[in-house]
Structures are given as C-alpha cells and as structure tokens.
Image (cartoon, rainbow, N blue to C red; front, side):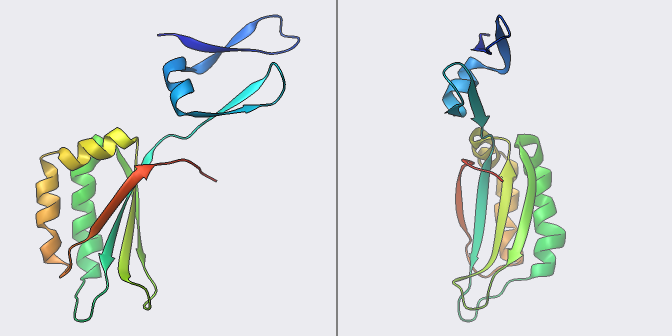
Length: 145
C-alpha cells in the first residue's frame, strides 16, 4: 500500500499521511494552504433517506416503526455498515409524513445492506406500520459540520 506524503517547510523531510493515497486522492477535497502545505479533507460515509408519503387516508403507526421496524433494520444492516439513524415527524403541510436518515460507513455499505438477505425481512415489515410505499434515496456524504 502506498502512502501519501506532504512536505512541511522547516521539517526537512516529507511526512506520511495517515490515509493511503488510493483513498486520499479519490475521496478527498484538497485545499492548498501554501505552495508546500496542502490540507486534505476526507468526507467518508453515505446516507440513505426513507420518506413515507402523506396521502389522504394513509396510515402510519409511529410507535411500531420506532419500537419494532427500526430496530429490525439496525439488526439486519448493522453488520453491513449502518451506524445510526434519525427519525423525524415532518410538518403536516408537506408531502411526506415521516423521514428517516440512516448513516452508513460508505456508499458500498448501503449497497451491501440493500442486497443482503435481511432486506427482505425489513421490506416485508413495511405493511405492518404503513399503508404507503416508502421512497428511498441514497448517496455519498460530501460535507459535514
């Protein structure tokens, strides 16, 4: 594995980065602080967002979702990189009733989770708390605060 190096004025030698160059140069944002010092900001991770539509006559059992469904998702997807989730009840005038943001280790983790055998169990459970089919979107994390 090849490691990245950066020169620091006055140090007399280049220093090793803590990140392999294959990762560093493919996923990092480079900020040039001077001609010889560069800062690399690594944005790791991915999110998957699940949105439950709000329609006239639709039903959603929030208690079941929080106490049964989301622990089921965590049980099935944790080994595939699911780190955490946050569930929000959305404003009554919007097109969605509930949103869930799941944080994964990487975009590949999302793919592995969705292709795992446990996903069938998670998806078949939706009918137990929602009358609507959820919408799923996912992508790379490109910024954090």
